[in-house]
Image 1 (tube, one colour):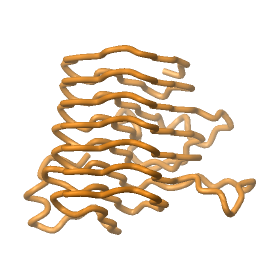
Image 2: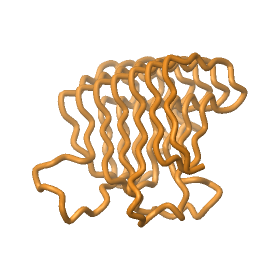
Image 3: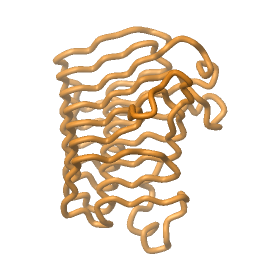
Length: 213
């Protein structure tokens, strides 16, 4: 908790739960690592309510990693279940860059119930994940009075969302985002699904039962 760490060129395999679980890190960078056959998540990062509304800028960077055969979402970023599950504004910068996410039994990447300073998802390949390749639920930009009106702080750029077996390429619920230069191909429930509610139709619920966090 509240730590700073750098994980580089490591191989984390066959964890019974999460291969890497970070609780409220100040700064965490994971680069060039291989995550395979995690019982749950390859990487799970949780933020505590008490870290919201602070001047300390926290950073999470996951870059050039390979994720295969995770038991649930390969990467999961959300508030901690140890605290209040209300949505809080966090001074957090998150970058998910140039990763390969394949054959997860859940989603490829989930980000839920967070108001962030910046979230950039760029250059990743999501392929053959059983549920949504990307799942965003109630993710918004933290108010920044000094921000330029032309700067994009919540963006999904140059990603490949291919062949979700039971979900969508990207499923976005109650979130504000820019998608640019992304490639969607052969996803079961469609390429990009945008909705104002987390309630799926009965047919979709049946096909993705247990897959949404």
